[in-house]
Length: 386
Image (cartoon, rainbow, N blue to C red; front, side, top):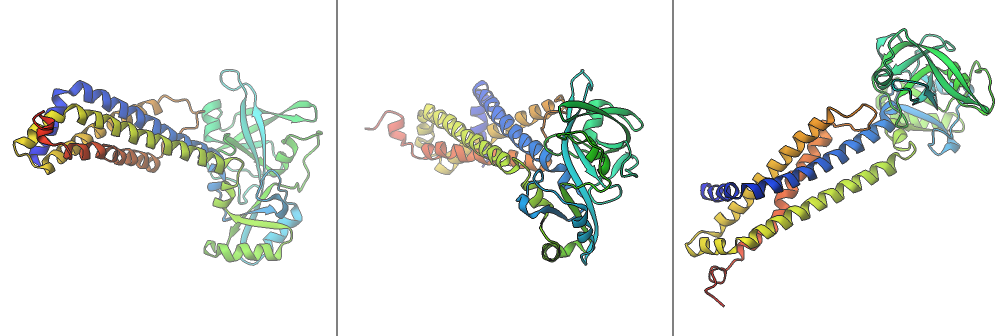
């Protein structure tokens, strides 16, 4: 072990420029893989964050919507029927639309998800500052942390919402009464308003006042016993007409583009790992070919194959770890200066998986060079054999 480490370290030190350069190449591969992982996590969170954090166990759609929130419509009668099913603790209406806050910092509009909820019902997120919604038709709003960060809005401030009504752009003034944690939906930050006010503000073909009991897109169902989610789902579908009910994971996986997006990014990540494997393997194979005479000399003086293989493997691990360390530090530094609007989320678990993958592919890529060094014939390597 000590001999193998000594041989490996001596070669690295004497050719430190070459090995440092290759460590930087591994650092760039690490940077690429970590950013792809962060982008996948960020885009995924931007689609699922609100639904994933709902204070409910089931989402109810219109059965003809095929789990498409935009195509679903749940009326007041259906929501009342859901409340009457045994085992249901509460039901909340949720409506989704897209509007904009005009002239935030820098003078540009901020596209947001406008989410209508029933005050005090499932669907309304918990606040971290201020208070929750109280009245069904009040000109009040909860804003998520991303909106607060980008716009600088605080509890008590008033702001305008721009929404198309027919052929005109209408503006609605709302008061911030609370701030929630990040609750992105549709890769946009979110604001929450009472469901009646949502029905009034949401983009429509013609201007109209919000109905007292407007239809919503979906209903959030909170159960008395969350462990009975499967039996309750079947009971809801059997007892209430024209609905479909799914758990939260199924709901956010069926948001527009979520599955295709994640599949694309996972494929990119797989190709990046494959490229890393080939690059690392190619470098160490060339490195081994350049030192065939030295390996032949070591074998000629009686150095065991095990020591030579261990030396090559230790060398691969050292260079790989150094490259991953540099790449990780650079990635961490860059993550501190990115603006909040860029959908990058460096989750510890996904980052650890990415780093672990790189640490594994390094030795795997170098196995070719280890095998090559074991097959070196001393006499041929020294030019003394035919």
